[in-house]
Amino acid sequence: MSDYKAMLVPVREEETEELSMMATYMVEQHIQSYYGRRQKEYMLESFQSADAIRRAMKDGEKYYWIDSIPAGEKESVLAMLDMCGYLSCSCQDHTIVITNLYIMEETRGRHLMRECMELLARAEDLPEGMERIRISIPEGYVDAIAVFEHIGFEKEGKEEISIGKNYKLNCVNLSKAMIS
Image 1: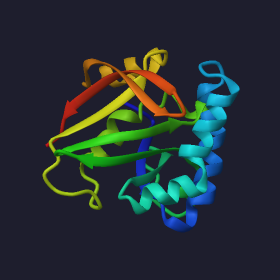
Image 2: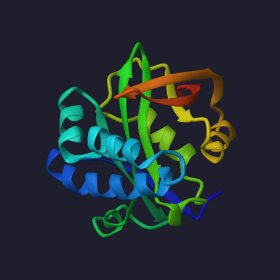
Image 3: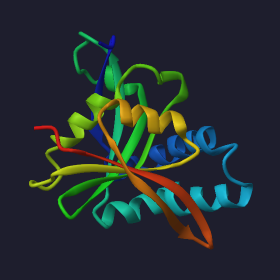
């Protein structure tokens, strides 16, 4: 049992600049050693810039701040000022597809992922009838893969994902039936 409680807070369009700043910071943390400078710059501009986030939101992608508050603390405005990450997702074929998920390094280890996935499964702004949650994680992120396996996700195989400009990510696909 964790001493922290997770919250998912929908990102509003007027918060895309702040989200982009957080995303840039966290992508720098996560991908520093995995990709070259040019690929990293391309990924930041193409997927984490405020303009890219706004375009994705207009195309139906949902973005959520991930907040971590001490267990027992009320869900107040003050508690929500300390966001520790974000996730984005789209819905395809009765499946919630997580497209981005980052947790600040200093807040990892709080055991928030299971609760985040349960909250995502119940998110009111997603369509009804979703049956699975799916995520593709670059295969070098072994700790992230282990976390998702620990909370009940199963490996479905590997996939090479083209992200544009001849850049590719070798990913492990994981999924889990929705929590009822």
